Amino acid sequence: MTSSNTARKESTLIPLRAAVAILGFLGIAFQYVLKVTLSVAIGGMVKQTPQEDATDNTCGPAGANTTSGVSQPGDFDWDEDMQGYILSSYYYGYAPVNIIAGYTASRYSARWVYCTGLLMAGLFSVLGPLAAEGGPVVFMLTRIIVGIFSGIITPSMHVMFGRWFPENERQRLSGFIFSANYLGTVLSMALSGTMVKSLGWPSVFYIFGGITISLTIPWLYFVYSEPESHPRISQKELDYILENTGRSKKTNDEKKKLPDDEESKFGNPWPMVLSTPPMWAHCFVMFGIGWVNYTLLSELPTYMEKILHYDLDQAGLVSALPYLFGWISCSIYGYVTRKCTQKGVRIITTMRVWDAVACIGTPLFLLGVTLANCNVTAIIALFVMTMVARCAIYGGSYMNHLYLFPESYGSAAGLALTSTNIPGIITPLVTSAFVSGRQTIQQWKYVFYTSMAVCAIPYVTFLAFGTADEQESKWLERKEQKRKPAHITDVPVTNSV
Figure 1 (cartoon, rainbow, N blue to C red):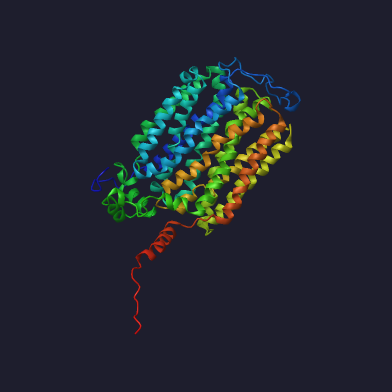
Figure 2 (figure 1 turned 45 degrees about the horizontal axis):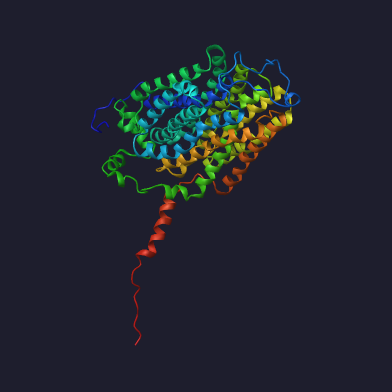
C-alpha cells in the first residue's frame, strides 16, 4: 500500500476511476462469455438425435436452414438430460461462491480476488476441450471450477464500486459496468456458432479463455482495491472520491490504525444482513429476475434451433438480439434514474417503478411469446422486449444492498448475487424436465409459464418490505436495546419497618 505521504500528481488527463470502470466492464463481459458460450457450443459438441413426435409441434423454417444441425456431427453422445446437467454444472460452483467472495473481497483485497478469478476461469476454460475428451464428469468438473472462479469476479467489482465511485455517479455507472454481462452474452451467442462451424467447437474455449487470461495484465497495472492505495492516482481525484463516498481522509487514516478485528463496528456482518427483511425482499426480486435470465441464457439457442429451426450459427445470432437490446437499455435506465433523482425523486420510488417494469413487464412479454405460436418475427421481437423489460432492474433495485448496508455492502452483495445466480443451477434442469425428448411448442410454453410466475411473485414482497433506507444504524439500535436488560443489576429495595 502506498504511503499517504507519497507525493501525487495534482491531476491526470483521464480519471483512474474511468480505467477501473472500463476494465471492470471488460472482465465481467468475458466472465459471461465463458459462462454462455457452452449454451451455443454444446450444439456442435453432441451428436444430433431425432425427436419423437415433434414434426407437427414445431414451427416451420422462417428462411432458416431446415437441417437444424451442424455442418459436421458432434463428438459426444450426451442425451438431453446429460446436457442439462452439463449446462447447470457451471452454476454449482458459481452460485455458492458469490456469498463468500463478497466478504473476502471486502475483508482483504478486491483487486487480487478479481484478478485471480479472471486468470483461473480463463485457464480452466482453455482446458475444457481436453477435459471433455475425458468424459462428461471430468468436463463438468472443469465447468464447476470455471464457475467458482467466475463467481468471485462480480462480487469483487461490487466491493470496488462502493470504494471508487461517488454516490452521484453510481446509478449511471452501475448500468454501464454491470450490464457487461449482456455484452458478454451478445459476443458469445453471436460468435460461438460461427466459430464452432468454421474452426471446430474447441476454438470457443481456446480463444475466449485466452482473451480472459490476457485481461489480467492491464487489470494489475491500472486497478487497485481502493483509490488511496493507488500509486498513480492524482491528489485531486483522490480527494474527490474520498469526499463523495463518505470517507474523509481523516476517517480513512483512523481506520487504518485499527486492528483488523476492530475495523468494523459490526464485527461479523452476517447476523445483521440475514435478519433484515428489506434485504430478503431484495434477494427475492434478484432470484425472480435471475430465473428469467438463466432460462433464456441457457436455453434460448436450443429453442431457436429445435422449435424455430434455425441452424446453429443462425440460432446463436438470433439468440443474441435480446441481449444486444438489453445491453443498450441498461445504460438508458441508469441515466433516466440519475436524472430523476437529481430532480428530487426518491430513490425508492425509482426502484419500485423500474422493478415493476422488470418483474411485471417481463412476464407479460413472455406471455406474448406463448400466444404468438409460430409467428417467428413476433416471437423474436417479444424475446427482445422481454430482455429490455428485465434490464429495468439496473435502473431499479439492482444495487439496493449498497443503500441498505453502506459499510457492509460486500457481504450483502454476495448474498444478493447468490440469490440471482441460484436459478442458473435450477433452470436447465427444469427446462430439461419439460422438453427432454419432447421439443414441442406446448412443452416450451410450460417453461415460459414457470418463468413468468417466478419473476412476478417477488415484486409483491418488495412492495411490502423493500426500502432504500440505510439499515445498519437501525440494527445497531435494536442490538443495543437487547443488551440493556443485561446491564441492569440490583434494583434498590426499600425496607418497610
